Length: 175
Image 1: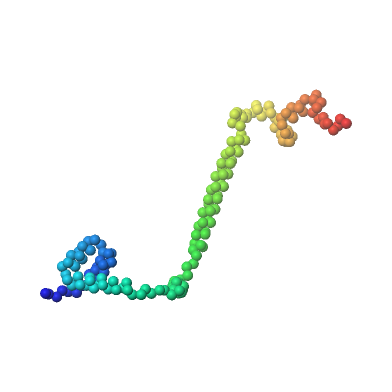
Image 2: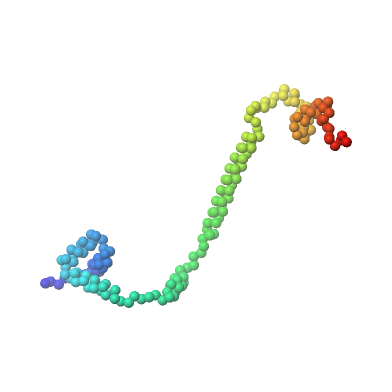
């Protein structure tokens, strides 16, 4: 019987992965073939399996009550304190907010102006102004400042009729 070479580190790692059930199917099939042909590999696999079985009998250590606190304290010493990146995005967010507000205000202003303009100008008949119209309405144009305080055209028509006794009548003056 010839003496076979010991397992390499890669073969031993594959054997451990095989025993743990973590080896890929192709690699597992190749290792099973080697186990069936090589008694040295078979003996090593049996030794590792028994060692794993003995680990179940060892007592399991319990962490100390301060384990989490101590670990976090050690980590905080090793890692630099992270600063809040608020200053990096605030100018960008502020600029974006102003741009969005400006867009909303201009859109609302434009739409409101269109609606107000549409309601203020009657679209039924266009006003045609020529020299004859200006000459015919010259007295109205000259007295426009007087007409600015008039509430309605009906009041002006009533003033044009001086025979109306009720025009300036007040109920309190009758007594």
